[in-house]
Image (cartoon, rainbow, N blue to C red; front, side, top):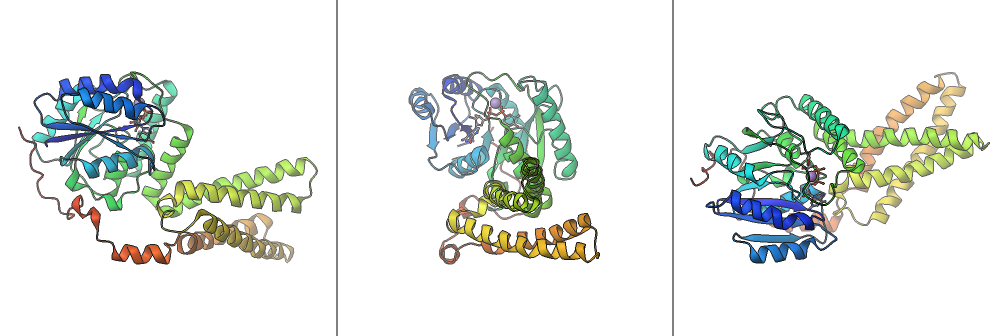
Length: 386
Ligand code: GDD
Ligand code: MN
C-alpha cells in the first residue's frame, strides 16, 4: 500500500459520503486506503460502513469504545494499523480539501523528508475557513507563541497547528508521545527533529456538522504547550496557579457573606484541593492514570497529603509572621513555593506511581510497539512509488 489516509471523526455523519467521493477522485491511480478512527456517539459509524461498502477504494473503520487521547490518540491508533508507511492525516469535515493530497504526495515522492505539512501560512495558503475573527486571531497568536517556544524544532514549519499533514511512520516513536487534544503535529515535531517540507492549502468552510473546538480544547492546548516545553512540572504549576486564584476568590466570596476568615480558608482549601485533583487527573497526569490504580485511591492519597501539608504549612507561616521573621505575603509565597515542590514530588512518586501489578506486567510484556518503532537514526525513507 502506498498511502494510508487517517481521518479522525467525532459525529461527522453529514460529511462522510462527500469526503470519500472527493478523496477517491483525488487519489485515483494511487494504491491508497482510508482509515476512519471514530469516537462518535451518533450514527457516524453506520454511515462510514455504508459508504465503505460502496467505495471504489479500501475504506476501514476503527470505532473506539474507550477513546484515549481524543483526536491525537485517534490519529496514533490509526497510524498503528495503517498498511502503508506513508500516513496522511486529515480532518473529516472537508475543511482540509482532498484535492491537496496529490501535492503532499508529490513532495514526499521527491524524497529527503519525513513530514510534509499542509500549511495555511506559506505561499498562497489561506485560513479563510476559520469560523470567525476571534478564531483567526487565536490561531495566528498561538502559532506565533508556539513557534517562539520551539524555534529550532519548528524552524521549517509555518503552521504547527494544522491537522493536515503526511508523515513517514518509521520516523515516529509512538512511546515518546503523549497524545491529547487536537495538536498531534505539534506533539510530533516538538519531541524530536524531523525533516519537514510544506505545501500551501486553503483551509475551507466546514461542509456539514459542528466544530468540536472548545475552551476545554484551548486549555488542553495550553497545557500541552507548557508540558512539551517545560515538562510535567509546568502543568502542575499551571493547575496550582489556577487553584490559588480560586482559593483567593472563594475566601473573598465567603468573607463577603460575613463568614470568619478561618472557616472561609478551610472551605476554600478543601474545594481547591478537590478541584486541583480533578484538573491533575484530566490534564497533567492523564497518561499515568491507567497504571496507577483506582481513581478513588489516588483521590484519597492526594486529599490526605494536601490536607496534612496545609496543616503543617499554615501554622508555620503564621508563626513566622507573628514572630516578625517575615511579612505575611513573603511567608505565604515562600511556604507555597516549598509546598509546590513537595506536592509535585509526592504526586509523581506516590499518587501516580504505577501499581506493583502494572510494574511487573510491564517488565514481562514484549514491546509490541516495536512493529511501528524504528531506531532513531532514520535511513533515507523509501520514495513513494511513482
Ligand atoms: N476520533 C476523534 N476523537 N476525532 C475527533 C475528536 C475526538 O475526540 N475531536 C474532533 N475530532 C475530529 C472531527 O470529527 C474532525 O474530523 C477533526 O477531528 C477536526 O475537528 P474540528 O471540530 O473540525 O476541528 P476545527 O476545525 O475546529 O480545528 C481543526 O483545524 C484546526 C486548524 O487547522 C483541527 O484540525 C485542528 O487541529 C486545527 O488546529
Ligand atoms: Mn474543522
